[in-house]
Image 1 (cartoon, one colour):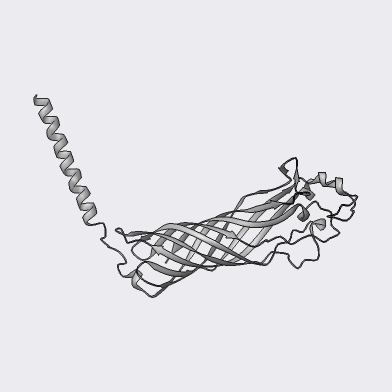
Image 2: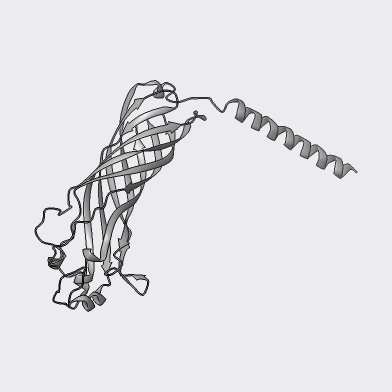
Length: 262
C-alpha cells in the first residue's frame, strides 16, 4: 500500500506540473519578444535565396509521341538555384501584398525515344515525306538550360503570431521571361537547338513559417510554380518528326525551397 501511495503521489505531482506548464504555454502563446512592431510597417523589403526542382509537363502527340500506349518523350527533373528581392505592402492585420522578382538558374533533360517515327517517312496526312536518320544519343537527348526572370505577385494570408513565429499561405500570378529561350534562333532540333517561348505566364502557391529573430525576420517556405502557356516552339515544317512534332505542349512545373530575409 505504501508503494502504491508513493506512485499515486508522483503521478499527481507530475500531472500538476504538466498542467501548470501547459496552462502557462497557452496563457503566453501570443507573447512577442522580438520585432514587436515589424508587421505594422506599411512597406518593407528583403531578399531571398533558394533551390528548385524543375521538370516539364509533356503532352504527347498521339501519332508521333506515343507507341503501344507508351510515351516516346520523357523529361527528367533536375535541380537548380535562384535569388531575388522582396517588396511587401501591408493590407491589414492578416493580408499582405508581395512582389518577389528573382532569377532562377535551371536545367532539364529531355529524352526522345522516337526512332519508330521513321515509319512515317513516306508522308501522311499530318506530315510531308522526310529522309529518316538513325538517332544517336546526341540526337535523342536535349539538355535544356534556362535563365529565368521570375516576377511573382502574391497575396499572403498569415495567422496570428505565436511567440516569435507566424504561419502563412500565399498565392498569386507570375510573369516569367526565359533569357535562354532560343525562340528567335533560325536553327532547330535538326541542328541540336531546343527552342522555348520567351514570355510566359503562370501561377504560384506557397506555404511556410515566419520566424522573428533579433535583427530580422527569417522565413523558410515551399513554393510551387506552374506555367500555364505552351512553352514549345515548333521545329521547322521540313524537320523530321523526331522532336517537337512528337509533342503537343510542354509546360514548366517547379518546386522552390526559399529562405527569405526581411
